[in-house]
Figure 1 (tube, helix red, strand yellow):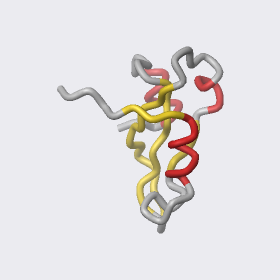
Figure 2 (cartoon, helix red, strand yellow):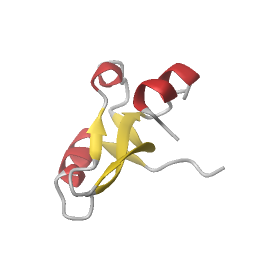
Figure 3 (tube, one colour):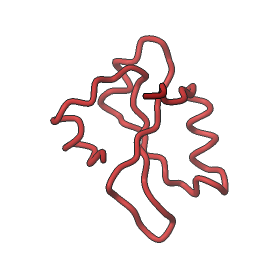
Figure 4 (spheres, one colour):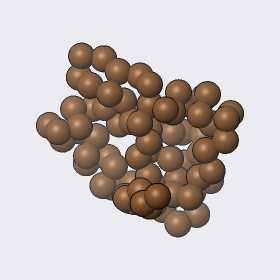
Length: 75
């Protein structure tokens, strides 16, 4: 499986408000503080609205346990 692309906090914030992403990136507040390298990966969630599917940014290398998948509704 390919490694997901990694983004910095600044890139995530600028992408979040760009026309393409249309405010569909949700930043995880609980895991962001545990990020040691400053890079994030986007994960698709099961949430959507009229703007499109929502994505959550998690620290790079986060193990997607059943608890994390349930908390963020990750597909």
